[in-house]
Image (cartoon, rainbow, N blue to C red; front, side, top):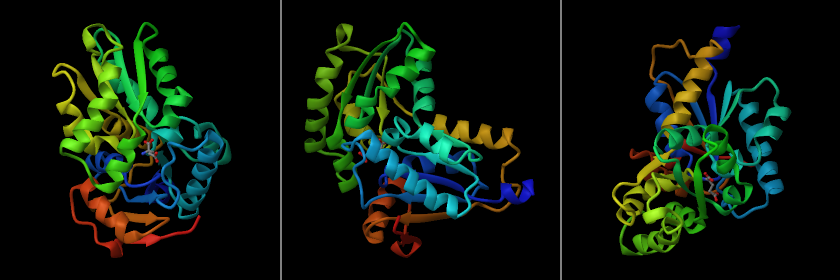
Length: 276
Ligand code: DGL
C-alpha cells in the first residue's frame, strides 16, 4: 500500500506560471517523482484578492489535485501560503501540505548576519504579514521591512522580464524599501512571490551589490524531499518522473509563458484546460 501511495504524483499549485519556479527546484532534487501542476490562470492575480477569496480558490484548486490522487501538496504561491494553509490542512487531514513562506523565512534568516531583512511580495502576502511572523519566530531580533510589488506579477505573466522598463519599475519599488535600512542596506531581499525569480536579473541591477537575493524555491524543495522521505513516500521508481500541467484558462498562453519559467520547451498540447 505504501509503495502504491509513493508512486502517486505530487500536486503543486499557483495562481499562474509563477509556481513553475518552485516546480523547477522540486524537479532538481526529486528526479523520480511525478508532478501535477495546476495554474489557476483564469483567476490570477491572487495577490490583489481578499484572504477569504484566496482561501476559497486554494480549496478549489486543492480539490482538483486531490481528486487526481496527489500524495502531497505544495502550495507554490506565497499569497495562498500566507492565508490558506490552516483551511487546507483541516479540509484534507491526511494530506501533507507544504507552503513556501516557512522555507523562505528559513532561507533568509540563514542569509542575514545582521538580521536586516527586506521582503517584497504581493499586496495580499504583505497585508497578511506572514513573512514577518515566520521570520520573527526564527529571529526575534530581526529588522524587517516589506513592500508590495504587485506589478511584478503582471510583468512576469507578460514575459517582460528585463530591459529599462522593468528596471525602472524595480527601482521605483525598491529604492524606498532600501531606504528603510541603515546605509540603505539590508542583508538580503526575499522574493516573497513565486513570480519574482524570473525578474531577478533586473532586480539585481537596482540593488546594492552586497544585498543577497533570496527565493524560497530551493529550500521548499528540500522540505518536500525531507517530508516525503520521513513518511516513506519517496517514489521508488528508477525512471525519470513525469510532469503534467493543468490550467484554468488558455493552455497556449500557459505553455508560452511556462517555457520562460521552466527554461525548456512546453508544447501547448501538454497543458490541459480544467474547470474548478
Ligand atoms: N505567485 C503568487 C505568489 O507567490 C501569486 C501572484 C498573484 O497571483 O498575485 O504570491
